Length: 152
Image 1 (tube, helix red, strand yellow):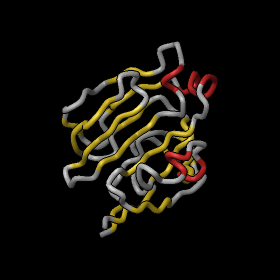
Image 2 (cartoon, helix red, strand yellow):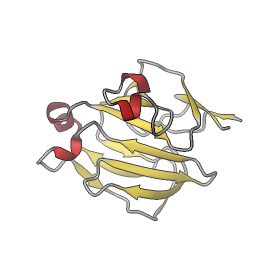
Image 3 (cartoon, one colour):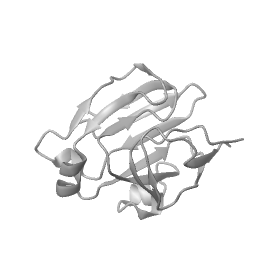
Image 4 (cartoon, helix red, strand yellow):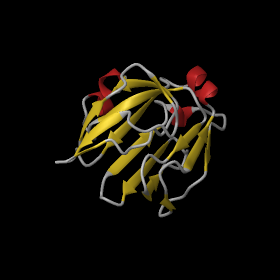
């Protein structure tokens, strides 16, 4: 089964997962996905579901969809080491969310200046296969039709 019903969680430029400078992501150890070079402060839920996990620093959120899909949104690389306040959480673990609902507000300018990378990996933890449809194009938070997800 293939679907395109997945909202872009972050505004920026769409990249392949291989472009992420971290082998955990680029080698698909956690699962397939894509990345976005962040260019906006709002991170929204890409699907309807439940918040399955929130990292204490706010640098990553996991959403479990009603259909069982699990999506990890990791905001930048090595952002948890930044001393200044980078993230403002708007959800908590166990909370139901709708596609397009605000999850996190991030200081993307500080991420660009202080993090290892401003690429944000979006990873499907259930091992779905992802095809990026708009590679190297700018996308907006909440936009649909950016990827195809193939469920096994």
